[in-house]
Length: 361
Image (cartoon, rainbow, N blue to C red; front, top):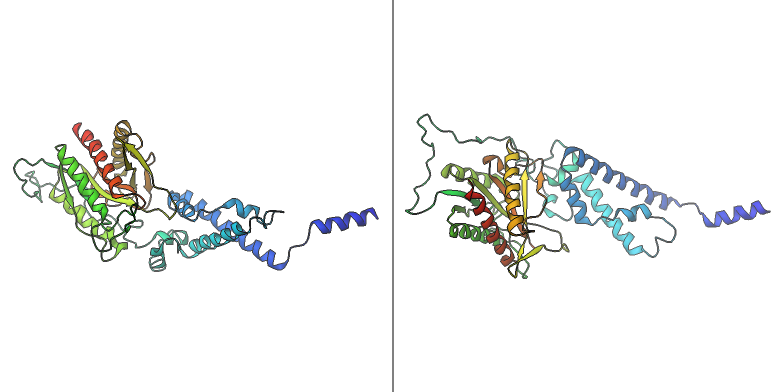
């Protein structure tokens, strides 16, 4: 009798899962396994930043998967669990097909340019030549100088009194703009706010006696995903025209998912955006680019604490045209959530940092 009563209580407390529940559990298990394997692969290949950034975009709550089916958890958290399932489907789609539903660019070309690394990376392979999976370096790293020491491509004559050009500026994604004041975050086919930021940087450097050139050629009007195939031509020409360039800057703004807060610091009662340094490791002298970045960041931390984000963003399978110069850097001034004024303020601060670094060279 006692045994029967005990068994009766046990069957009441612990019911057997239905086929539908087993199927759901199996699906969630497969999703979890794919995520774990994808993350392990990302860490092993040295390109985990993109994968973690994708999961951050999805705000993926792993704890909800682990607690699925726990007594008392499902019903009060029903809406949250529904969100988890939708996010799980998004992650599964990304891992299986390379399509990131938060990034419409991945709906195209994901199947047409598969990289050798496998399906985990399809979502970032927008174009084999740009920039995550760029082809072999065809351009010479160092300028070829004839035996008579005369440059093969002499720079254009400088106007009287003009300083020697030591900083080159261009914008791969010219259409990028700032929506912090309610405007568009991109001006398709036009020079957007980010080009204005480059112009502000140039003007501030010139006021400090630094020779600067800023090329405003548009690179992303025809095909955004081939922007680097176009900007590499501009960057190469800048190096050829001005071999005195010590720092070659590609000016961008970051792109964050909706809901992410913008980052700012206050300088002299003025809010300015933070600056992220991006370095592509797929070039023979990325460590020299990195050394320059760290020197600039150290100066920035002394003059304007917090101006530069503390961690450099590395891309293992990209070069971002940085193979062309030992002073090649990609700087991202805030994100689309910032305002143009905040980005211009940061450009003026960065100009001071660059000017101080150049004094010692």
